Length: 430
Image 1 (cartoon, rainbow, N blue to C red):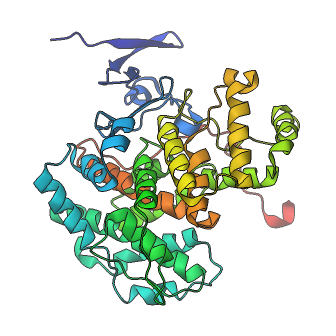
Image 2: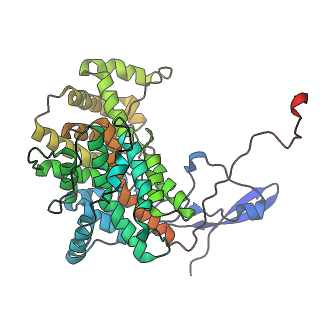
Image 3: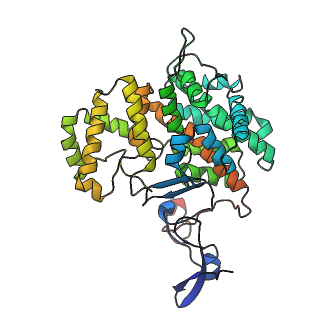
């Protein structure tokens, strides 16, 4: 039996022994769960950048090496050989499905894509100019009012039903939010289409004429969904886990994740990258923009480059760039000014020592925004599409956490810097 390793922490002459845990991948972890009880101190880690809040078997990221694994499988292999619903099955169940298991999984998802008809009225309660993410937060949260038979988180069958409902209905809800925002009628899902094609059909079809989904566009959408399916303990996933730790129902937990994803520093990054390209306008204005980025006093940021975790090339970005080339070739928009700016900005950033030294490589958001706009999506739909993709990751993490025997309600500590205890002063004496 291997000897238990410990770290020794010395505080005011008192030594505290802390166990060291070794993961299957990644750095060792110092277990501080008993630190407060043993030494009467907390740790301080804003942003939780050095703190593991859970153990997980779902996704592993090595930011320095540019590695992303889902259940041990590299994202590059999954993107080349798999498709979104197979990755969903992998994330949820831990192993790649057999042909029969995959067929059953896909059929179950397909037959859950319609939403309760009364939910249509819920959409009509929003203003037409409401952001689709605002609508999605409300509608997904309201699912608990429509699907009472899948709210018991202690019932494994109900957890499974809730998981399928969320994965299946999220594209329908996102498409309806989009249709409502542009004043077009809702388009019902079709069981003869695959997941990505069905979503595109619900977004772009109209009753007046037939709409055929192009296979290249569908494949690109499937890849966008796959590349955003899960990304370890990011802000929205941590939000879902924190909400789940209280025993909240699955729809409330996912609605909380959607609300967190809405932030421009998280799910809105691809929209911010596209808006940056629009602001630059033409390739000849790039040098001035780059100069502002390098100027510490300008507050101008380079969006779509670099990553909180990856200090190397984002492995998802390589796949996304290939999809971008395929889609733009198909749509004949190679001369698009926005694309010209993007290509030139990418070239300069990859050759400029300033960006190389800081490891500011193009990330997945840089390319996904270009693809989505080429497909015809407005920037307001970029984050809802991200939410559709990430739903399976949130559910997988939610499901894993509920099965964890060490589950406790989340309760971060703080470094209090306010006033010490003082007496109340009557209003006339202040």
